[in-house]
Image 1 (cartoon, rainbow, N blue to C red):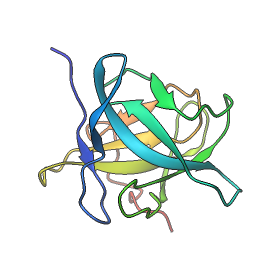
Image 2 (image 1 turned 90 degrees about the vertical axis):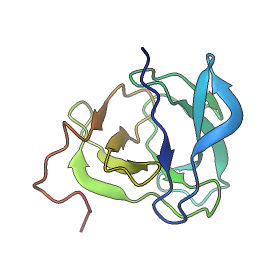
Image 3 (image 1 turned 120 degrees about the vertical axis):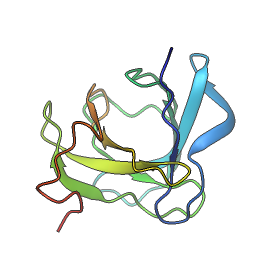
Image 4 (image 1 turned 135 degrees about the vertical axis):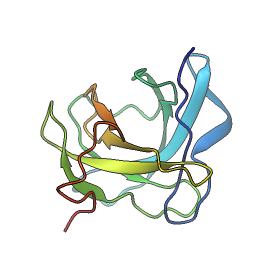
Amino acid sequence: MEKIVRVECHHCGESLTHPEKTVAGSPALHFKAIEKGTNGPKVDIFLSAKFNDFRKAGHKFPKGTVVRLFCPHCEEEFKSSALKCATCGENLIIVHSENGTLNITGICRTVGCLKHKTNEELPTEPPIASA
């Protein structure tokens, strides 16, 4: 059985699962994004919500680009955490599961990096929030 990740914005509580968009037949997580170090404009990107499926749709950033991710509803930025990607060394962003469960997922912000972490892999130290 495929595991579908359903997450919400920790600012406004809205679902990031797009009600109609799919990526390769799987539900899609909707984010707004801009390249790190720039001011926009924000573009739509859709990540497959299927766990360990790294396909995406929407705007095409060049491989290796580090992006800033925003909620498509309230447009608040998902801040980078203190946790680093084991593959590329970039800070992960943390997203929380819908319905108030304690499941969290760390997503790498580097385009083309095939790494994320689940709550089972995320350490309790250092703290998840960045300084």
